[in-house]
Amino acid sequence: MSIPNLSDKAKNQMLKNVSSKLGMTPQELEDALKSGKLDAAMKGMSQEDTAKLLNALSNPALTQKILSTPQAQEIIKKLKS
Image (cartoon, rainbow, N blue to C red; front, top):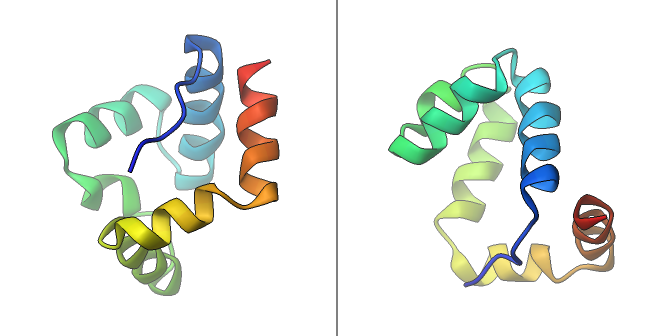
């Protein structure tokens, strides 16, 4: 599975948006993701959302399917701008 390359601006914006929803700083989220310690990134998520995320991450075909949806492509397009 390959995730489309995003500009630094888009990556920073995505980190900012997601980290605010998880109740952490963008740097904390980035560090957690780089280290593979997703438990820190998921601490602010509901159990249902955590289960959905883990399912998607453990299933490359599902992840690719999600990233291929028009909605995901539109978000990626906006983040690249």
